[in-house]
Structure formats: C-alpha cells, structure tokens
Length: 318
Ligand SMILES: C[S@@+](CC[C@H](N)C(=O)[O-])C[C@H]1O[C@@H](n2cnc3c(N)ncnc32)[C@H](O)[C@@H]1O
Image (cartoon, rainbow, N blue to C red; front, side, top):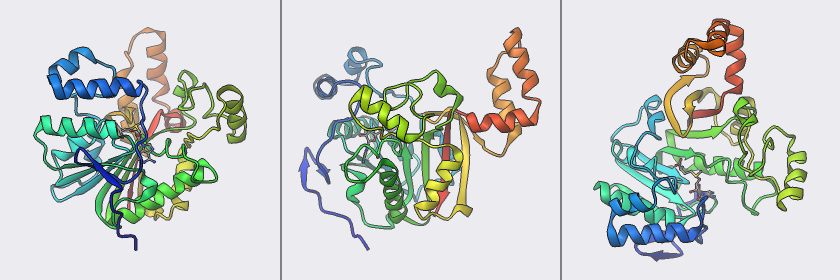
C-alpha cells in the first residue's frame, strides 16, 4: 500500500510534491502581480484592480452539489485540482479538514491567502500532480474532482488521455476510505450547448468528433494532440467501471445551470425535476417559450434532452 510521499521541497510553507505547473487563462505574471498585491495592499485593492480577471470570487456556491452527499463535520476532504479554492473554501466551513492539491503554486498561494482572510485554519494547501499520489491510501471521506478529469490527459506520462483519466480515477479510489465518496463535476461530450461553445481544446466541435479526427484536427490547427477528453453519460459509466469502482453505487445528476454553479442538482432519472427546472428558467411567453412549455410535457422529449444536458455531477461511493 502506498503510504504517501515526502515533499520534494517547501516554499513559503507550502509543500511541493511535484514541480510547479502554472495553469490559468490569464498569464502567469498577472496572477503573480495579483498575489503580491493581496500581500502588500489587501483584498479590497485586489478586487478593484483584478475584478473578474481570474476564476476568483467571494461567492461560495460552486460547492452546492454537496447537498446530495451526506457531508459531515467529521469529513476529511481532498479537493483535487483545487484551483483558486472556489470549492475548498465553502467545504472547509462544513467539514473537519480540506486538503487542497493543485499543480499550480500560484493558485495554492492564492488559496492559502484566501483561507487566511476567511479565518479558516482547516485548509491545507499542497502543490502536486495527482499522478504523484502525494497522500497515503484510504485518507479521505470525500474526494472532489471538479473540472479536473477533463484536464488530466494533458500529460505525457501515459499512452493516451483516456489512460491518464483511468489512472487518476484509480488513484482517487485508492485514496478514498471505504464508504467514502468521489464527486466529479464535468462536461457532457455530446451536450447541445457544445454547438455554441469553444471546447477545452480551444477549438469548436472537437468533443463531438471521433477522437482520432479531433486529434488530426488539433495537430493541424494547434500543433499538439487532442487530450481534453469528455464523455457522454454512457462513456463516463464505462470509464468509471474500468477504473475499478463498483457501479451499483453511482448517481448521475444534471447540475443546473452547470457544474461550476450548481443551483439545482437534478437527479438524472427524475424527469419531473428536469421539467420543473426548464419551466423555471424559460419565460412562458413568446413563440419559443410557449413551444418549450409544450415540449416539456412530453416525457420522451425530456428523456432525450437529459442526454444532451450541458454537464454532469457524478457521485460514486466506494
Ligand atoms: C478547471 S480548474 C478547476 C479548479 C477547481 N476545481 C474549481 O472547480 O474551481 C483545473 C485545475 O486542475 C489543476 N490540475 C490539472 N491537472 C492536474 C493534475 N494532474 N494534478 C493536480 N492538479 C491538476 C489545474 O492546475 C487547475 O487549477
């Protein structure tokens, strides 16, 4: 059994289990400046100068999926790929301890400062790659992979992105205590919304394409392989099964409006809840509004629509 690793170094009291790898849409220098500004001048100044610049906000709703899991004050949680801490912070208020792990030192430094501002002493931040298995097996009651699984393929440690995803899930399974929960928040490969959006690859429509076509397309247009795999519901079930989880303990939710802001967690099998959610958001007037009202009364339409929903919240019990 793996007993966890020793840090390779510690910088500003933050242990490193792997080398730093910056992650974020804004350039690294911007986040460096922002972190220095927080240290020198405080959070008010940060909010003025860097408003909406990073994935940082004082709102604490990204972890609202937690209501579908019996999270308790005894829980020790791993927030894997914790980013700017939009899940670690709200979770820390309701559990015993949150262990945040991210490849990016600047993101972990930001989270540490944020935890300090909130007076939260139960958040531990770590720089590390999930593939380096920094923690002993069976350490956690809950592991969160929100917006992580689609990115773990961006490594050359494995033959292909799918293999990387399976290994990351196997590691999560090893790190979970028996009876613990894994929560995955992730996009749906075949979501209708992908027609209008840019995929993680930075290009349009790549999630819909067969992988080998997406790969060729990426190599031509971006000069690198396609490695941000997402799946349909069926695809996730297959992936999770291959990772060794027991499928009798898996629940799919449709987070509304999306997994990064889960106001509602609609159970995949609850068509009434889905209808309620759609009726609540679509105004009942205008041609489109009225057509939608009629369509949602047809169970087959709802049944099909949930397969095209934007994203999934997946809860797996070990
Ligand atoms: C889309 S962000 C999600 C952040 C956060 N979970 C949230 O929901 O707000 C993905 C994060 O995963 C981190 N990451 C990517 N690959 C990783 C890996 N192999 N090990 C640890 N962290 C990783 C990135 O540095 C980034 O901060």
